[in-house]
Length: 255
Image (tube, rainbow, N blue to C red; front, side, top):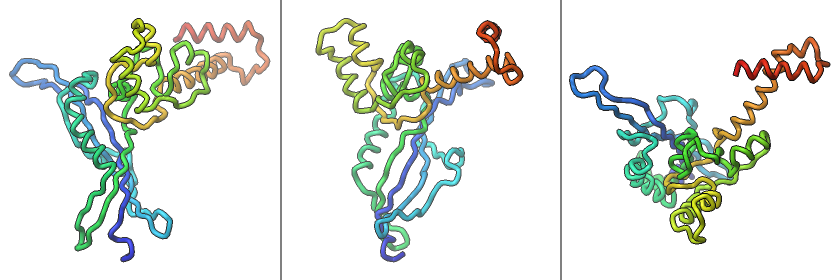
């Protein structure tokens, strides 16, 4: 152990940010002022150290989704849909994080100077926050997916297969195109070129499965399953097309 107690230790940190809803005073004597809050927090996921060309695990969070290990870093009275306010408040924090990515922290612990490297994973964001911090249009946009450039129509035609093509760097480039309009295009042409990027991205998120495109694929599968359940296909596997259409009509009425 003495050979590598001084590090460098690699610390993986999960970032999270989410709206907390209405936090206005409910029973006080003052005026009813609607206020919303946003919490930016982090979780230390694991700490490792390299020894003999292998990563030795020093610490791993046993309950990474627990509130007990999720440390609030910034609590702000703001609406999570307010891009300008979020940018103004979180930009210094993000700048600090970017500096930490390319540097090492040195701490004296137990009489030994130890060094720490940090890796940040922006995975604790829901779809609404991903759209907000990556500069994408809101969830009503025709560009429905936060992972790829699919439009609503393209996603409905291709319900299963798609790949992760969006990235933070590309979103930044697309924002510059949106802002400067170098090809002097109309609004619709420009919007098609930038694929729904309309504000400056300011936090890099890690693509995860929380994307509407995946949800549509899941919904299509459940739609088929519900039809089969309505028709009790396990009793009659050789049902005719007309019967299957009746099942679909029954399901559509319920939906």
